[in-house]
Image (cartoon, one colour):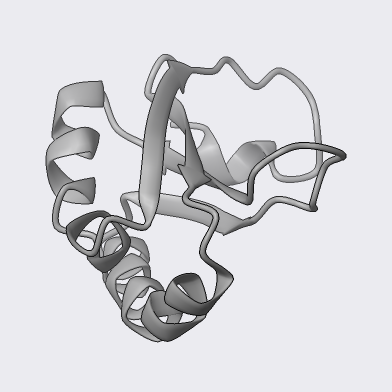
Length: 102
């Protein structure tokens, strides 16, 4: 299970721009899900003093490949994403374990 990657998007402080480009962003991610690359995605709940953010869970052996695909995300092309963090993750227990297991 070394092929699970968690991506954290931090967004710019522009709710109108986020709302404007959200449909294209979600359509793009739907395509990655259809390819079997994206397992789950969604917005993070607002945190006190924290910027808007999103969390994406991928199955891939390469962080570089995921980053290259995400470079085509409309949110990134339109400057909505302020930062991207990618980390490997080793899921051990849980009801969705079979969704990310080999």
